[in-house]
Image (tube, rainbow, N blue to C red):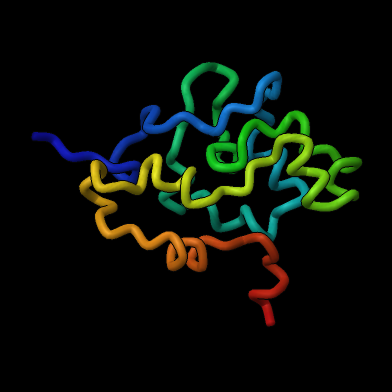
Length: 130
């Protein structure tokens, strides 16, 4: 038996949330406005996740939040998170996370969603500065 995890491979290891009609914009696009969130992300385990296809290169953020073409614009962001969600942005929940972090994935047994969410939470990076 060969055991692998997202930390040990650089190939496709999961399929991002499907947002019909949306395309990937890439993490560089996200970092233009969210540098406070993305600046240390390139070394995170989740940064190594990849999706299939030429359109899915460097989609670190979109691996969990879904393809951003319909929600990344300033117009949508200026209206708030709820409008972003209506435009297709995925707010990762336990159901999404356990697609990878489950009992069939030997490196993630005992996954505690509440604890993990606190560790990776970046919903309001300004709060963490205080």
